[in-house]
Length: 152
Length: 317
Image 1: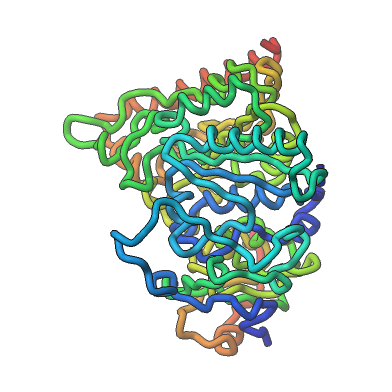
Image 2: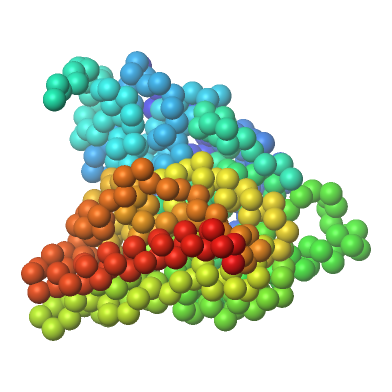
């Protein structure tokens, strides 16, 4: 069974994009602004995994776009061959890959575009789209069988 | 320079993303695929600037930012200017020794959409190229002003319908050819100019690394299908880029020092351009019998361009 908050920084997806803060009025905003992505020092950030980073509340990592989604991709770890096609083409940095292994999907940032399902090369696909309301166990129990090659 | 391994996808995937989710780009947008790939190509510190466009408005929705690196936005046209300014400042401060870490390698990258690269920011980009700063400019070419509702830009190809060049009873959409920005930039004498596509991730990553490693102003034009304005299903983004590279409407090639042209990808089966056009809603009207000659014209243009590229590759001029 996959853990939903798997490999997450505790700050992930706290805010709604629209209502994260009490926003300033149009006549109170100053020209230009500086938004720090991290609390404190940001040196060597490329060497840190998401769960090790100290995100500030201005980083969009702490926001969520989960409400954009109508359908969600569900990941079946039994079929996956860790090819990482989904990781390289995910537009929303929502594929959680650690140590060359695909571990799951970041449902706080996934917008349900279905690109990962399209690029998945396994048979049957190890990522499939299900309705947002579907729970994981039901989705996994409906997984299709391996398709046989059609003879020409 | 600390470049990351792109030997295979498994090794590439051990990089830690520096471009965070919950930006407001459309689902299936290729912009973020390209940006993520660039930022995963290197472990060095990056200084990035962006022109106004989809990428800029979507990744800096106040009070949030999606960038884990230094990022600056000033005006519509001056990503190239902003990043070259930072580059000069970095050089001077390095010389004076006033940087926090004097030896840390820093790379300078500017992003622009096709509107701000081909039209509005062209003068600024040309100036930065001429001054010869050490930076990489990446154009995310989605062939229209997608951020403001899909107006025509000089990157829009012939025959495409846009909100300001609409197809109808008297028009087949845009009537002019697309500007050849790659050749224009190569003519600036830039050490590395390329046209790349996100469906061939390895070639693209290689191109990015080459551009970052090369000293001097480098330019890369990348195909970025726009599911909203090109009118296709978001899930088909990669399939559309496959069609684009295989039908040679977007050939992948690089030009080194303005004359050494190398074709990076030769499709095994060259597709007819109808396959590419038919997959998108913006070319739907071209399949009416009265506009058949436009498709023929597009095909003959592509064939001529491909022949010209091959001649240039051989001749090295």
